[in-house]
Image (cartoon, rainbow, N blue to C red; front, side, top):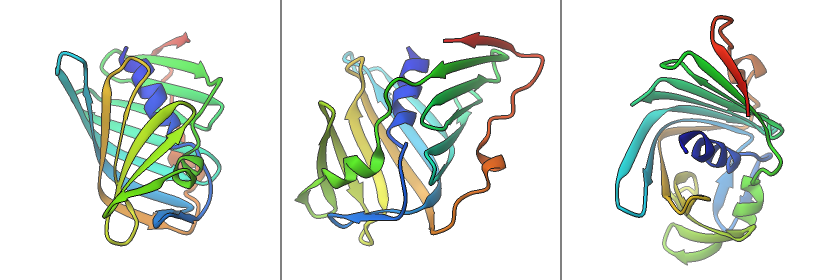
Length: 179
């Protein structure tokens, strides 16, 4: 269940270049700390913390630190999840990825610093700061869980991030599962 959620969550960050629409800014790259809160229908919560990198070219790397240590990397075609606690690597081929610039392009102003976007039968609530930088994204995943991603200390850049920083380093001694 968690791997499926991670796969979907990562897919929302697949996207492009410097993009400004509806006062929401999406740079060529950004780095941020994050808190990801997943709440099921029974109101049970799982809270993850870590940091992430996003760069033009559809490349995203999430480094989860709590409650488990794992890395999740995607390039819009493949997704790799390295679970350090389980010493396990799961690789997926993505059949469909959500494009963040298209979500932002579809965003409609709701109220001050809040936008609603509809994209591929999903609804996203996007909150920005006074400068139009991402602060929060909320949506329902494919399992009807509420997903809230809160960005903290986000740093935007107009330069791509070095590809080596965005790659998951696969330990040779870990088990590999192709999903």
